[in-house]
Length: 442
Length: 95
Image (tube, rainbow over all chains, first blue to last red; front, top):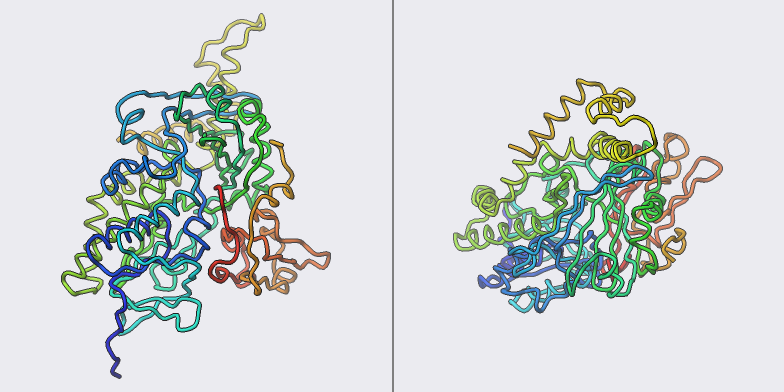
């Protein structure tokens, strides 16, 4: 059987105008490639939800110097809390820095509203010469001679050809599955995030969170906040609103028969949270899946004519101390673009040539970070680390600070008694201490 | 207005409803082969309604397109889903 050579209308087709897709389009277009960026939403960001703190400022600054001066950012993060909760108590580790890179350019992180930020970012790709087509949903890849040569958009004459396709179509990546690169997921590998944006006067936000000007906070919560569902909660400040939400492992929500939006109401009503959200007026409710399992759910990252980046490739680091996705989306998008540029220079789009993607992912610290933290997600996102221990810390502090005429207890016997009273076995505890150390310390 | 009902939450979300559903539930499977009905609990938009006969009624109009129902469903083939036509479905403005 003979097949005519593919009608290559574009050098690169990028599916999905989120942070991975838009920076891939930007870099490819700057290199002089003919780029088509496809987005199924009415505009880029229309389908996208995250917390959203964007920790990739330094990365984006290399592409667009002082990008925050022109982009729709909310507040830069100068303060982060990790709080351990019991139903009545909170114990928080409070981090605040006015140090270099936190309170000065390029800043460590910014809160953003995704529909605004993603739209701006896609416009930068357009300005660099990429062609953006919105309201275009991609149903399948096109193959010729065993290689992927384009995509099928759901419309009349929707077959569009390219030398390289980069799938940046998000956590549910239909494209990676159609290309045979990704398997079906298990419900313990993904978490559901539900979120609200509550409007609040900027002056109240500043007073309430001890902020000046454009400073902002990122608070994260573990423990009894999600009841017995494995997960956590977050609260971030925007310019004139708060973004807050609850994240729950899908399998755990099913097992416990808990509704995520009811957990969200419980979070807002917690005595440590209620005063922070008081007076907020609901502007928008949203929900999205999070690929929380990192390393273990990553697809095969390339095949002849195609690469996978961003959430579609599972590049989301959800590991206790870290809750980062957009930065890795951008790093992997850039690595994919670098790969496409080299492939176009060589005129070769085989899997063998595209394998150079691995090298670029390593250079951009994507695969190295995910490898380093490969033990963290399955363990940190489990019941003891996310629920049991944080709650025990909160309950323990309640005991330690209590003055009620009873004799003071020393901490070790108190801790011993609490462990004895819980469902945790001493062997389990030792194992967990080792796991935490292995996940974070070395 | 900090505490809100699910109905109040959903009223803040903008949807452009497509003519055809992008998610199809095979209620026969829900009725005969599934006793868990995980979809009823996990859907953040609360779109799965259990029926008296054990089946499931699904409203696609206010779907977030998150995929949680598909991931949570333990019965092969009970939920068939794709994305709505381009430009249709949920359109977030502030998230």
